[in-house]
Image: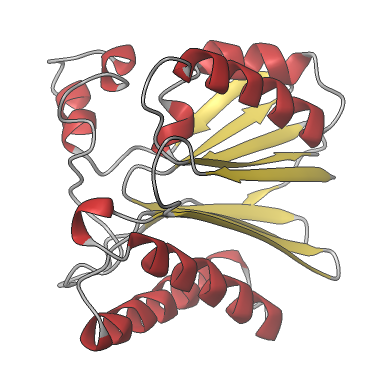
Length: 237
């Protein structure tokens, strides 16, 4: 397995994206988070989340979804505690765990995980956003999400008050030798199509090559525009 990550500031004054990749024996945890700028201290919230996941994963691995439940809840507690000492802060999150040859993932907000197998797109997480709801209702297309004026309006985030946990978890599945995953913030996926993700995957021998090729496309597409922070982790089996 190979993996690689990037986390870039774009044209913003502060980088509110955070990433972490943790390996313990033959188990892995990958996390990408995007702090919400409108609420202030987004970089603190995203940093707390990734640090909490890394700490929890280093302490013990108790199965994919059991770990994800615990880590998301521990991160929520840490962010809420930080809010009491500072200002309101929120973040999106997407996490992938690989434990005992099986994988699962969880997400909140519009940071995404894409799953590919044998060079083909399999599935992606569905955003907790206004634009995703517009896609579900048939009012806009998937491609129109990338440039819609309401694309930054989220329905769920870490740091919100919870009546019930806002994160969603996948089923636990057996890892395949031909699996590949991309975790990324909206600043990344808005500037590259799903088809280009697949095309670059097919021409890449490892995760670093794949991510670097996608990065070239993202930065070329974003040229002459005000680029948001953008972060991603690529994983190839």
